Image (cartoon, rainbow, N blue to C red):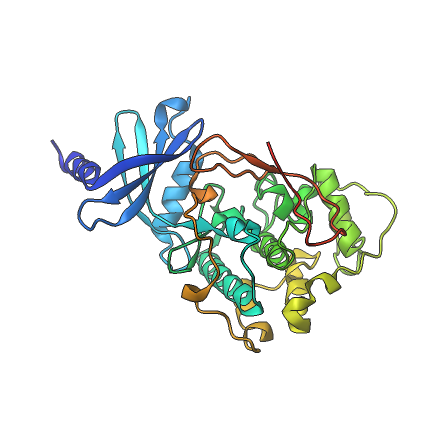
Length: 359
């Protein structure tokens, strides 16, 4: 047995699988523990035999980036090992995710709580961006939360390094509700602004306690964006009509008065959201600049993570589950099989209404 085989055998002996907590076409997720420390872990077991050309590219990406990204607000990859025709990723176990927190209407959010979740998200994202990594799928169920209330960015299966200005990347990234207009109009050249748009929509979702722009299709998503923010002009977004898939959505809109819905974050908070949701991706605020925004300096101060509201029951974080459906957010429960699929509520309706349907 060579050294690599010895190390692989030692890893298999150290990380013990227990209960299956998620199942998909290409991977299963298990709760387990570390024999050395007794620490609870999550094991994502990817079936190499299920792929015609070997291991899924998303697994390779996830391993690559998590090995490079070590930060308190990014999920930790503890190890990897192989057995037969499968590859397993060993991840730190996190109790729940931000989507579950948002949907739990028994929890009451204070302004400091929203500020704390946003600060942790931006710290993790700033670290990724400073290392040249685009996440490309930020959404509440990819923001996991530990037992101590710490928020960590997870699921780097769609992440990639930024290229040069002329590099061409796929526009079929970011779950639809959190996808920026440049991707909806087919841009193949983009940068950190796509993640900042996603963070902006998550910010509003924390306030509304429901998705901000829940489109049924890419065209419907664009219509919802334009209905709320108004039709982009050439002055505020130069060259947007030259994007590959640009189509005129219809009658020009000056946008709805949406800011009163989110005034609980104060005038300065609304200003930060507007900086995140600028049409021109080159003019969107960066994660680093957002962290120095007056919003985080004013009272109330961000709530300490350990004091943040959290569901009393332990939930399986969706980002630890192996199967994602593009543009159709779902949640698999620990019991397996039960899914929730979001409806498309009127974004101008009563913000207290729950726009969810259980299938």
